[in-house]
Length: 381
DNA sequence: AAGGCGGGGGG
DNA sequence: CCCCCAGCCTT
Image (tube, rainbow, N blue to C red; front, top):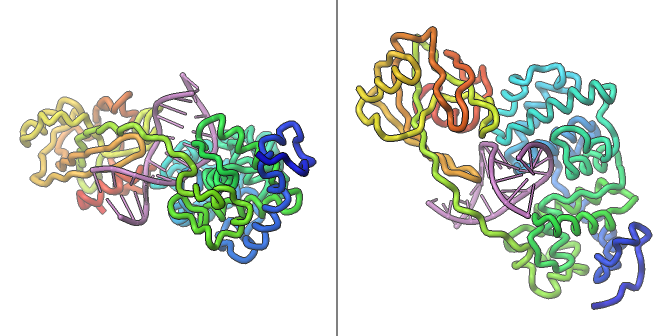
């Protein structure tokens, strides 16, 4: 192990973490910033200085890829152009703009945070990572991103791209999501973020991870940081970062009912504290496969929903893969002929449906992607 | 420290 | 059918 020839002025107490790469804080910005200026993708949130827009983009980009978030970003910003507009809007409107994007707690937190900004920060997005991180839904990554991108604060960020780049630069064969490794990576990031153009440097680090230092088959030949990359020198890029094995995802079977009455369709609002929390969907029951006949189906709906239904001949199936479970839907269709003005609320997974509505248009309530898919399958659109 | 929380893309 | 991606919060 080489001994460091030079010590950074920053955080001397944590300096040993870079003992093998003491020149990284000096060299990396010199290599990455010119590369970034030439090669960065022109993304809309990089063309603005509006902290609100940058905060929104960083929230949407959590666990979500750029191409997925892009259309939502434009729509959301048009619908809620300012913190004040967002804070003043009803939560259901905010969730409707988030419909299909997933991780709906992000939208709830965003809304809560907008209200907090109006109450505690006079409607102005706070300019330091320390203040930002106090907002709901804003963790150290998002706080650092907004502070460095919008306010040029010299503060680091570590997302999965940065973590992968740093692990490879330092030839650390670790799982970056493990708490100890994450702590070390934040220390490293803190030591290398330059006082000059910290936002551009953070962008550059992420851009490198997204476009060159990619998870599989990193393009080391064209990498601007190749000369200070220890895993490239050692030939260990493919094995870094370490991936932990994933548990098997359970299969959840649900029977879904697309029930119509005079041009409207029945939707129910899911409970709190569950997946798709308080979003709306076609009523669904555990698929126990005991209503295979149409008469059995009518009995179940009379009992569970209090509805007299004439079932359809049509039926559909749909699989929907989530990170932690695999959904299997069997879809039934029918026309409600009695009981439509007083529908019963059946149990829904862990809780119970909170509300029901006969809707002419799915866009009137926030829904998940699965509900859109089911509507399409059942030819409702 | 571990688990919950969506959805999209590709093989 | 499988694989990949990946912050924040709660417990």
